[in-house]
Length: 292
Image 1 (tube, rainbow, N blue to C red):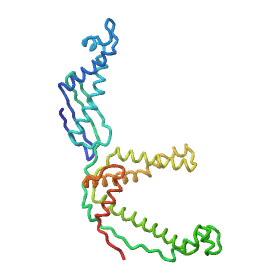
Image 2: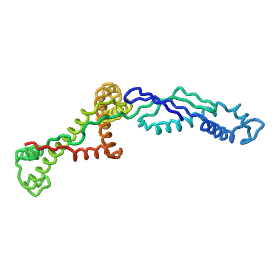
Image 3: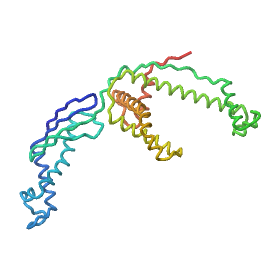
């Protein structure tokens, strides 16, 4: 098998693939053998039709079947041989098949080469989390107003499922603490990702962006439907939704590819848990600096 690769741009490649000899001959033999087992030709029993007669009556069918079976096999061997990380089904064209030779071209989209900067030791800033009495009081006042309670006392706390105000205040303090902790963690993760994104410049694969945009659009339309918006209004707003969601799709694909590049360098499996595992790794390797 001969393969030649032409680089079109950062994510697109054109493969010229040629295979000849026994591979093609044997495939034709196999296809004609299977056709012969069921072929109905006057004067011959099924399974006993001579090859030259089969070729006369079933040449076109055999040609199509050989292409159907041989092209995927040869294509998969070619991309494995060249080590291409193809992310979309190929566009096959310029196909030429004879009894001893198969030539075709395949346009493919591949994962871009993401050149990472220094992803270890990224600076992240944090501060000790504190919950003030004023914050707790504001939460209690909000609860009291929502329940139309005149006073925040032990009876009020018991109505919320706590023995008294001391326990309620402790629970609210813990709740506010966890909220602040989660917000800080999210901000730190965003800092890590944004730093990686700024350090890496590469072309986004169109097919990945289109798939992500389609998924975002499907979710947005489902949310609108669940809110009771009429189907015709949802369909009528699709163009506007698509325009609104496109930057988000670009951002999400870029983030995934950057994290995947780190995963490859650190031998982290590219499975569903990859993003979380990469972030965990980056957090361990980060340069933590405490704010006062």
